[in-house]
Structures are given as C-alpha cells and as structure tokens.
Length: 231
Image 1 (cartoon, helix red, strand yellow):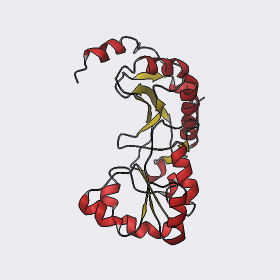
Image 2 (cartoon, helix red, strand yellow):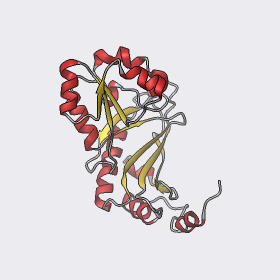
Image 3 (tube, helix red, strand yellow):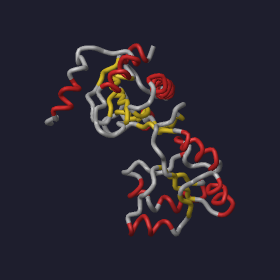
C-alpha cells in the first residue's frame, strides 16, 4: 500500500521498535493526525481468541466517559407505549414493521445504532442479512435488545461504544477525536481497556492481548505495551 507524503512525514515521529505507554501513544496519535478533518483516534486490539468457538467470542459495550465526539443516529424498533418512550428519550427514528420494506427495498440506512424491544426481534430478524454484515443487528449483550429503551438511548447518545471480535479476532474501537484533550482520551482508553480485560473468555488459554495499536484515521499505527496494560 502506497502512502502519501503527509503520512510518511507523520510516520517518522513513531518509532516502530518501541512499545509506548498510553500517554505517549495518545500524544503521538494527536501529533500524527494531520488530515484537514478532525480525525478519530482508534484502538485495535489483536487477541489470542478464536472467534470460531462460541466460548471464545467477545461482544459487549462500554460508555466512554467523554463520548466519541460523533453524533450518533439511533433507530428504535418498538410499538405503543415503548415507541412513545423512545421518541421522548431522543431516538432519531422510531417504528415497527413499516420500516422493513424501507430498509430492504429502498436501501435506507441513515442510522448508526439499532435498538429493539424483545417483542420486535421477530420483525428485526427479517433484516438480519442487511443489518448483520454492517454490525447493526441489535444484541442483548450490547444492551440494544431491551425493554429499557430510555437507558439504551441515553447510553448510546452519551458515548456508548460496542466492542466485538472481527473475523481476524481483532477488536476495533474509537476512543474519541484528535481534538480531544489528552486527559479525555486517556479516560476513554482506560474505560475501554478495563471493559475488554473483564470480557476475557474463561475458555481462553494463553495470552489474551497479543498486541494493542492506537492510530488516528489517517495516521500511522502506534504500538502499546500490551503486557503492561493487562497487568
């Protein structure tokens, strides 16, 4: 992969042979975020898990203390009083069966998170082929299948992020924007790492976190000392 001149200049600031502490990595991620937009700072955790085994899967969510810096659009599948509750709580879109053809046939996907009450999962299930690959399918483990739609919406709007293994057994999570204060990014990073460490599958033998890398959207990867992070 060819990188542009700006990337190559930014990459010079990062020593590939060094495993950085979180504070150093955050400072470097901010320094190397040189795009004209406010880049997202992301953390990528390569695990020793094998996601093909159900007892080594990782999926959960954590509310970042300072949010992600992104405005999140929430769609709620609910009926009756729960639909009214979702609207009152600030959901961007609320509906039921009538949303299925809109998503299936019209390709409507102007939302970032989907929440559903348990009784609506039969309806939402019909959208599995569309929502599943995009990571939008509601799930009880991430708190998006719930009767407490107010809490779900409030948490998401406050900066709740989901973490899960991808096909390569890596977890990718945003922890804020490059414009955030270093202290805010550190608080968010600590909250994420604490949640992921607690989510270590009991069935996993051997090393849990093989590597932890921080990077801005367009910047170089900065390797952290994974052994120190897991204590």
